[in-house]
Image (cartoon, rainbow, N blue to C red; front, side, top):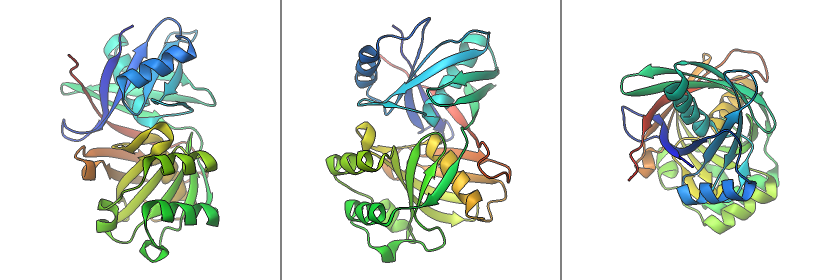
Length: 280
């Protein structure tokens, strides 16, 4: 079975978050998809099969340790793979819990892809979750940015967002993987998103992904969609478009654009460039 390796949300042809892509006539058994995802070793591998009409696909996502309901960067990578095989255009994707679209167009030597996320929602974070997350990372409440209070956010998957006042605190992020996995699974989180506000529309981000067996994700489209929805709910002056820089502190700078209207809970358009990864 052929596995394509494509990096999503790359920045100037570098960085981004690699995803495995498997396009086949039928899904392998669940155990086999888990095995392939673990063997590929990326934070997620997307599996896609034809779903009736042309341009429609059934998609499932696996991390090295578990199946996840939605993965933004793997969807962007899948868009590039579908465009390479079937031409530039818009594709309908049926996930486990939602139906979305991805479109891709040729850009230079690669593709630029954009997904429309599932609906978004957010709520103030559970105080117990906040305390546990601060202990996990060794932060104090004084290090949090009061302009963006801690929140549980959703855009196809569940995340916690913590905003930090000091960029140096973001750069210093560290935590124990096993403890992070236990916390995320206890509270049903896919990632914990740490944010520093660079400007009203630009943000530096790190995403801890211990729930999937990965210390950190260099680009997280699902969390970007959820975060954009949170900014809209919070009445942040977002101007309907934000730019997220992620992965810089781990040497894999990634660039994610999120665009959205003012409709509460509405879908977020998340876009970025892709690049093919050579594999021996």
